Image (cartoon, rainbow over all chains, first blue to last red; front, side, top):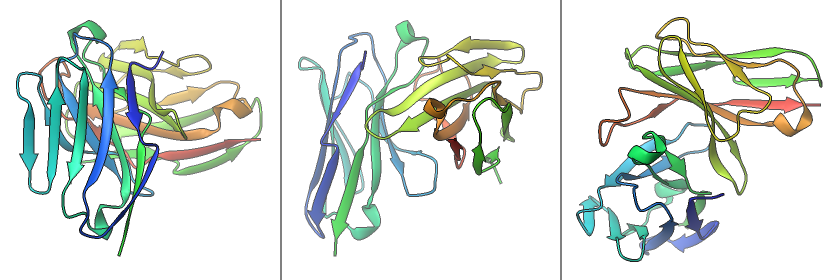
Length: 113
Length: 115
């Protein structure tokens, strides 16, 4: 059972464009929603995270938007750059899952020059 | 440098030949975990450990064993590997994950091919 569903599976964006990746979750007890970024040949690394009592968090060109009622959250990458080309994973955790991270399926982002 | 290391990085083996993938962290983290990454399935947790001598099953534990005899090491053991265990494996560690926002640090990955 996939508790966190992520879309799209792959995304191609032109340099300077906006990349949007969406995630939906089922467990209403989740209270931590991070995004991880993975470059080829590397392990995932934390990019940005949000808690459910805020609707948006911004760090530089990266923004998480959170919709608690819809149980959805999304990553927006503004002014996308070729260096942003990577695989992005959303994740969620909460006390009822023992604080273990449940990951989405991943999105492979390609930013063309 | 704070890091999670895994060895080997690449491994080709045959069905049934026991193997061990090592994982070590130098950040004094209590929590360590193993994941496998497969296309279209994301990262799925195999086993995790909240501290020394404390291990528990994740979402896909079948065919794997772990041990946590020392805080820094968390080896993954495949006693009789099968082709469906061909995958990319990641070890991760953190301080107590029950603290909100605790970041997990991932190793560089081990790519395993079982023939």
